[in-house]
Length: 283
Image (cartoon, rainbow, N blue to C red):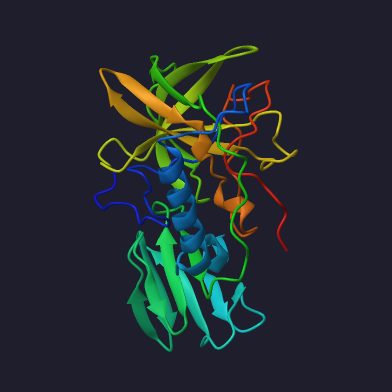
């Protein structure tokens, strides 16, 4: 459906963005060989959040374009200091920036710099969204639970129950094409948990990832209330690895301009998953 790769709003760390976490009962034994890589990934991610032009801390607005969005003055749909009065419209599937009778294309999933701002048109024709970025605000690095052993599972991917593609929100708060890739069953101390896995992106997208969005007993009590993401990495032989120490929050945890993904059916774990990224309310 999409001929271009989706614009990546954050770095790919360790071969894939890993965005969730799982804790077993033992807290005493820290990861050994994986800890240096994990620490570096966290440091790199914190640096990216603090400085990247497309960090969620740099986002000013994310709105559907609909019949058109006014930019610039205080009375505009998206007020932007120092931005000349303009309008963003969608015409016959194309997104355009209209200023002083001049029309400039905003290619989908490719950021366009206008003055001190960056504009990103996303979504599919008829459901287009506009993200506006400015200067990243100053915020401390994310907090994490301590790393523990036994948090890397290598599991088979069970067959999906649902066929076909649908639209859903990704970790970046933007609509994306997705399909149900199947299920993984985790052997937890209190019993097995069967989690739904989505392929986030079209089948033709070579950067599409297998992800799980889940909630657990820490949701709203130490971790982000809406849930967290974890990515499945191919391990060969039809197996997939989930390293739950690499938990990450959706972008809505960093900035209220992003909508939070809705809960995925059945992905509520009746256990305390005290690992990966924590959530401390930020101003």
